[in-house]
Image 1 (spheres, rainbow, N blue to C red):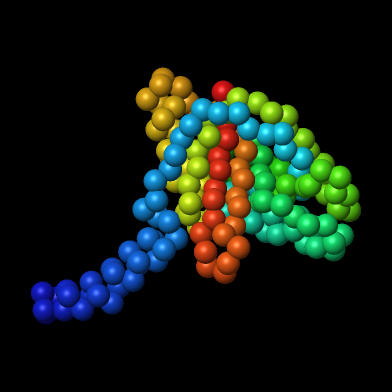
Image 2: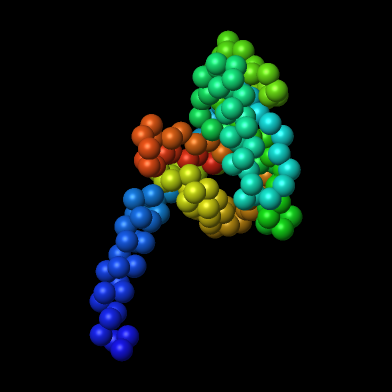
Length: 175
């Protein structure tokens, strides 16, 4: 019975899944380079907990920007601990880039990162796919050089500016 229905199954389920994966940037290549990055000024909230709940804290930080009527820049995260070593839990600073001269929204902390040499992994993809693609590409590149991924890392995400569009995800690790 399944032999006669497999074309319909492929058309109804597999093709749409592949199309969505393609649309979200799942097949896009990640570029890994050695460069310099920063300086950054950002406003953030501290976070400790499951990696899957980070978006809620990120959203709270955005709410503080909106309440203060301060324009939030790119999404900015400093990941302090490796979730692979802590059963999916992470410590992080989650927030947004804060323009020079902009006031610090109430309830947020201010962070600064000076210009420094980094390994940078960058990909055009949806925010749900981009981090895993970037971390895997950076890890593979470092492994080929006899190095390992080391925390902290900095994550920046610049949305596409349109609903449903894919943005640019940048992962930085100090060299």
